[in-house]
Length: 76
Image 1 (cartoon, rainbow, N blue to C red):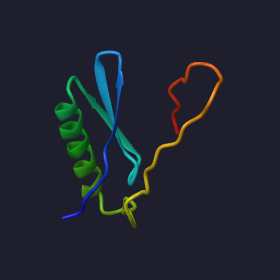
Image 2: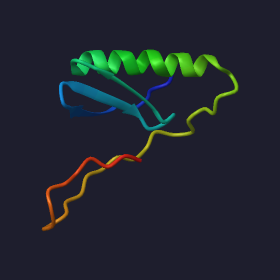
Image 3: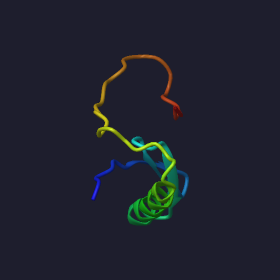
């Protein structure tokens, strides 16, 4: 069994979930549903044996920015 990360953010009425190890995203109306849907999407992705496998969990941290305008969502 492999452990993956789920990064979540609220967009309107939906929670968007993203797995950085395999760059797959999903969504749901609740946090639980978003994570469940992401897990299913990652499982389907991994069924394809040609897909790249993650080598290690990402290092996730936070940082602060002073001043400027109101932050906007940034997509990788």
